[in-house]
Image (cartoon, rainbow, N blue to C red; front, top):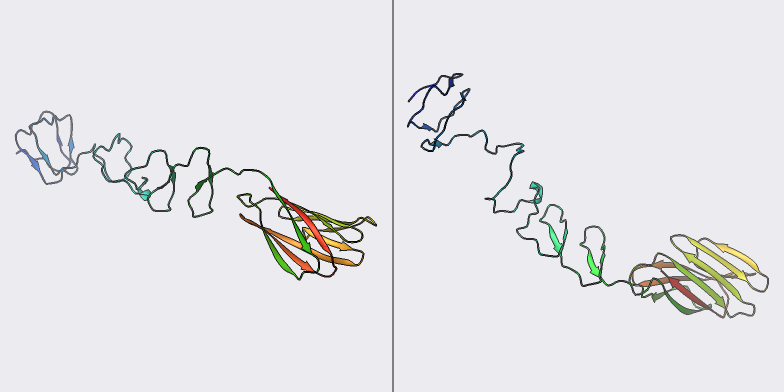
Amino acid sequence: MPQAATGNVISNNEQVGADVIKTGNIKDLEIVNADISATANIAKSKVPDAATKGANTDITSLGGLTTALSVAQGGSGAATLPDGRLLVGADTGAIESVAAGSSGEFLKSNGAGNNPSWVAPPTSNWKAGMATRDLTAATSDVVIAHGLGRTPVYIRVTAVTNLAHELVSLGNYDGAYHTISVDLSSFAMTESTTKVISIMNSGGVLSEATVTLDGTNITFSWVRTGGSGSVKYMWEVC
């Protein structure tokens, strides 16, 4: 079999006939304009055009790949992706899917780290109700279901007493309190930036309430200072 020293070239004027180049490495050697025919065998060789370790920019298909690439490898980590489902990330794990919702449903976030879910649309942008507070009742919380189907972003409260001369409190909360109390006999006005209801007269505060909102309830936290009678209050949330 012809031999080639390191650094030499086997050109098209030299033939490697029926001999076989086996197992060894061809180092510092160029094969120029060679015709490697179907009768030649190249065993355990490294072919320059094959995919190699590192960046490969000319791969057009992976027909023989049967194992799903992991997320870390740039794949989905899943062998199948169900039809019509929503795909969501799972950190370093395989991509997950959320089942298709029913017609007309909306996608709802369930917070960081949780998959979203499909929910029915809210039936109304506003919910309202009315309650009565005994002004002699001790400091306590009053919990009322609002029925909005989500956490309200705004609440408006109107409160009126049944005292000899009526006292009115008009308040709202959207992350900050804006409340005005009026004595209808003297039209004296007091503003509160810490309460959603503030029942006051010339003698001072009778009862006040802050508010907490969540996806199900409105919680009025009442603090009593004094007074008697009752107050009716209407709430509206959106």
